[in-house]
Length: 95
Image (tube, one colour):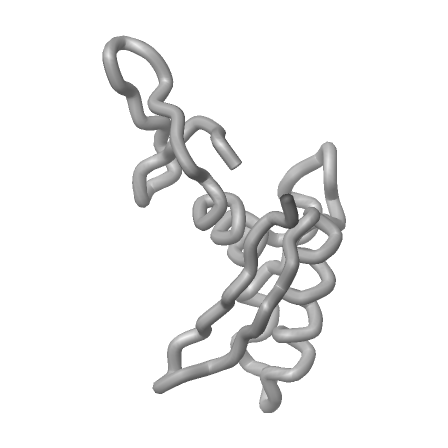
């Protein structure tokens, strides 16, 4: 998906005096994963809220929530899981 780009702090990037545009799939996935439900008033149930799952004993609920929210946003989730303590997600928007 082509959209405006943001830096690591969420600030807009600029190029040539205008908003920088480019591939934004990972940026969108990050927003859905990290934002809490209700944070986006136009889509209050569209986000995962990763911080809500930090104290869970199992990762099953988190992985289920990611799959549901990414699928609802139009992504095809090919696989996901934890490798060496890092969350790896293979998902992309269906063409």
